[in-house]
Image 1: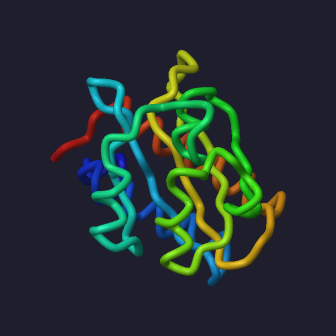
Image 2: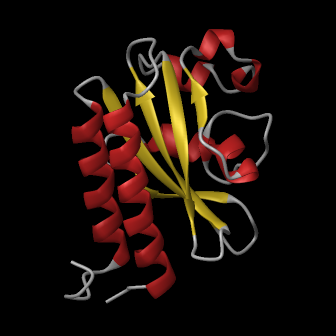
Length: 155
């Protein structure tokens, strides 16, 4: 897709769907990107409703908020097996739990210079952490996303 100059939005949606397949049927994936103002914006979330995406649009990276905002702020993988047991979700937990999600984890998308470009966020309908296979798969998908973002494919 990259070599054929498929636009970045289509590639990112494909990567989100691939991550969902790797994570299993109880998961939903969202790719958020950091915009020029430093805010998180939806780039690919094929299975999340628009009202949810509107509610999280424009979050600032913050190590004390959610999983994606924390991963974007720290550049580290963030795990939240249960929204109810993690204070980083105190102000936002009503959003994913209203959709039946119990927990999430987020993997940062980084440039070659180690700059955080965005995040892969995976929501679960059961309390759990990702398997090592899910983590390896998401790491690979995040590296592909970084290539796409650095090339700025918008054909």
